[in-house]
Length: 142
Image 1: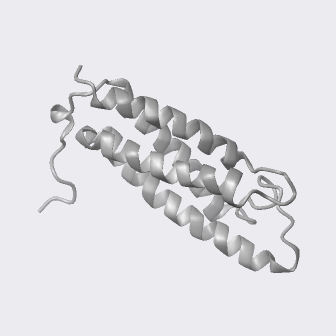
Image 2: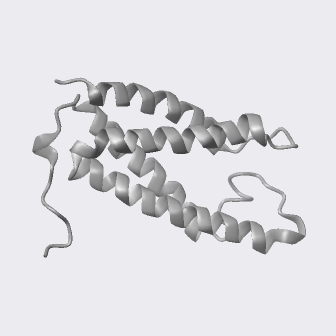
């Protein structure tokens, strides 16, 4: 049994730009995943500007855990964009859910007390809008 099942790209009937956006989303998920996994502070200080205080090890551990989940999800997005395009609508919905919850938490439910928002808070709002647009395109027959 091969590692990957046969490609489903021929079955995809949506707009061709939707899987291309999925490919971009994969890259934009993998890059932060690599940063969170391998940067010495996981990006908590040098990128997010967090004062880690006496819990530095805990903060870095949480950032590394997030990096691991981003790498796994990014690889799944990459597979869908390149080999399993018929899954494009499903993965766009997953991006909507993930980024929608991140935006809700970052801006409404748990905004930073300092008022400083890391880049991901802004990116999540943009990602929700774009994922919704490309989801609509992926569901239209071309």
